[in-house]
Image 1: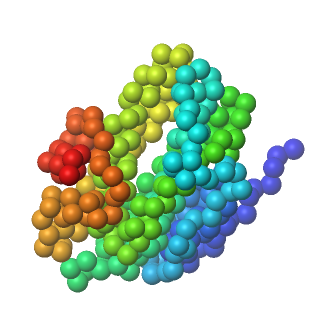
Image 2 (image 1 turned 90 degrees about the horizontal axis):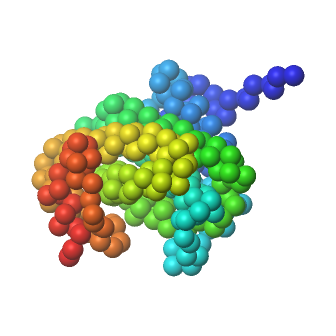
Length: 280
């Protein structure tokens, strides 16, 4: 007997900000990913309006995993089956937060003006697409966790990932600097070694998931660089100096080498932007 289709979570004709808020306010991880896909489908179909709207200060989270301060997280080895599960669980947590970051970007800055001009629809096209990608990434990692006999929520996770959103909630340029051009760019640095580790362990299925994520995260950094430079141009700002000033203001700590300069260059993120931020 086939299951009844799931009812849509939001009606056509409401705003992108409303749809984004519905994603952020969903407390269930799997349902959040489903809502992200549905919101993206509605946006691509032209069924959502581009009007301002209020966004929650923090996204809703499931009862599990237990969220801990970064310095309270247990030290783990990523060796063996338990280690691979812990690695994938940590990545699932990152991807869940990335869904919320992308839709918060799309909803929060609807109606936002730079240099006297409203942000174009193409800006929102990109961040809705990013959110859709992140939902697919979460679901793919969740499937691997379930194949290992568990699921997202089985281990503690750190509660520091939303800090970047809180720091940049009133500034689209700062959000672009910190989220796609620092946090997602960091993924370009660390994902290839993780793929090698999984392949060495004989876990080709998980390695294939990370390869897919790596390819798509490169495009997220491309979008970040494109819109960061666009907003700098509209505001009459020097991109390199502006990026460095915003990261120093809103991101705690140094950027961590070694950098995947080839992938960063291909994404339009020149090393002259980020290498000075590895030391202060």
